[in-house]
Image 1 (cartoon, rainbow, N blue to C red):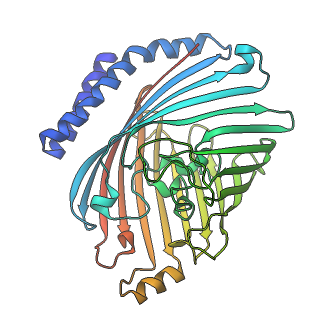
Image 2 (cartoon, helix red, strand yellow; image 1 turned 120 degrees about the vertical axis):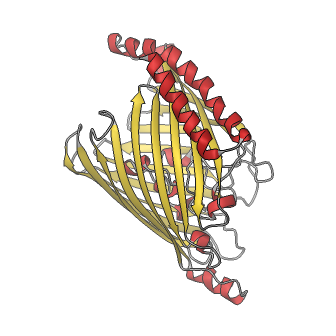
Image 3 (cartoon, rainbow, N blue to C red; image 1 turned 30 degrees about the vertical axis):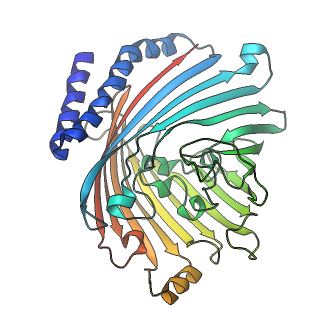
Length: 412
């Protein structure tokens, strides 16, 4: 089994090299073989341990390496290709079992991304085609403590805002960033709201049950340091404001989830306008089938104060089919659309400056994901971008991608 996996992995790498057609690209992609070898050497013992040991672990350690190969085949800024990667190293500790600190867990994670980017250089889109696209660095990512105080849970520390708020479970299949967090929300703040790749110092309170729950969050207004974007720092300053949010999650039945949230940022980027604000709503459901073969769907809408930010609204929807299709049992096929609209104030402002923009950018995504082994998943992806960046000078773009995910985990 391992020999077959090694051969199949080399085939994928050589196909990628043939498509790329340059030596520098091959040197980068060949680095994939290193984490693959690590994963192969550990995957079987980890799985065996999980099967025979039902005792919850005190500590867990995991690594996930994600590699994207992207080509802009038409339109956008220019045709071309690039390679993106992302490495997550995560350690969790159950302080209840470890040292008797009841109801308390802790997490620390490291994040690495290479320095290559795709959307800004090739497609020119504003929603970001790949959710690991960033001007990379090696940094501390999350570091928090979560405590059960009886009536609910309190989390404190460096937190990825999107790990707690505006979560789209069905949309997590898709590669485009808008199906992870709405673009009208990801634009908030001078350095984002505390999402990939820069977390925010903050607190989250969770009240309720699995069926109905309320989340409250308070986060620093400017996560990190915009002048040093490759570092994770905590720098609280007068005037940066606070991002506060409230979200309600409701599961009327086990297969349906409804969520709605509002947010406010007290540090408006435009003096004299007061606080910026917005909201979003998500509905997702398993439309048919069961846990082994099903069709799920989602829809999301969002808005932001139109005289403060470029994007005033967003709407997205998608369907995902989970079933054995071509290569095994763990396969997913999905189709989604996301459309971000420029705020009227922003459009009038650009028109006055004789730099007109289109009303909306819309992205159609078709994706397929399959897990070839317990540690390797492959996901080809196709996206068509209407009005990239809402720039009338750019033709519609076609982006073709291939994602590889290599995972490893162990428990103590």
